[in-house]
Length: 154
Image (tube, rainbow, N blue to C red):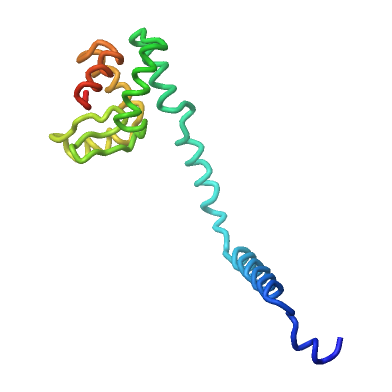
């Protein structure tokens, strides 16, 4: 290779971009490896995640509870799935501007913030409350869903 060609390396735009990409990747890898790992906290984080991970989804728990406590089988479960899907998308942390909270969108305008926070922490409490509410007020999830379709609330 002569001096004239040596000064032109990298020869084209593609070669320059290739060098830049590889250089950036190498820099990122070195930066990642240089960050110290806090090994003292790592086991605690793993334990905390293992403890807080539910064995069932809220929907699975709701369906099993609907059958065991109220005898509501597949048809009623479908109505419940759609109803709570529309209300909160099965999000146990759901909040609305009208002071409705959790999966069943329980109206809590007159509750304290501590009561609301406590309710939002537990999908199981929300589901138990919501199923009881549906039973007492409407009789079944399909009746609650019919009411919701007419009024856009239940």
